Length: 330
Image (cartoon, rainbow, N blue to C red; front, side, top):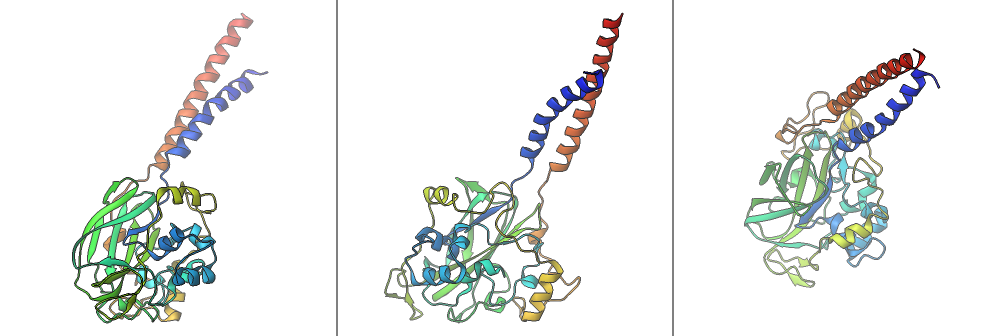
């Protein structure tokens, strides 16, 4: 074996652990869903995708199939970049405009709903892959009709709760918000925008104000309230990973892309923002503070640093091998 080949082999052996170090040091993709108040997708996953209990979840699974609910923590848009209202059409807010999750958009009065009251509330967002970013929570306006497809104009134009990089406790983001006064059935819509990536996640959580959330009860608004939903526990989540297509250390599932194509689709479908304005194509993207928060991605520096170390190490090995060969010949 020549000196060069021997040195190259040694360098290659030294390179492998450095490559592994670089890969594992890259940030994980964010995944998750609201657990208090529990989101529609989390509710149906907790009920069991193969045998859901509530009529609403049965209909949602029939529309979307079971895989959408095994992938409950991936209702996302990879390249949202804060343009939520421009690229998600009216009637498709709960699915984030993704056909995979279309069952979540079904307009029904019997979605399992969490009890809610006005005032301070501590929200809980299960994060199976945490990441830096901001959360914004919107609530439907007075007079909201759950029997009609959810539109941006059904939501208040400004979030009632907004937080950047909230505290992570036991695998969940926990933060407070002041819930506006409402009565009867309503919906809380969440947007989780990563600050180190254009990716964003969306949830719809059905809530009831006043009365009871137990089956057959009646709220102040006169609507019948179905049984209260339950968020999936850690055991269910761990077991469900066997059938999930989501890679918790990176992007998984069947991500769709939006960008200009998504904006065009939103325009053609008549999507409007919460104030009732049509989205502006090309440069009219909503400038939201959701996409302006900090966050660092050290993947590139790590890769460059690792390459530099490998190169330096290889040089030293080659020089050492040459000196040894010269001594043996002498």
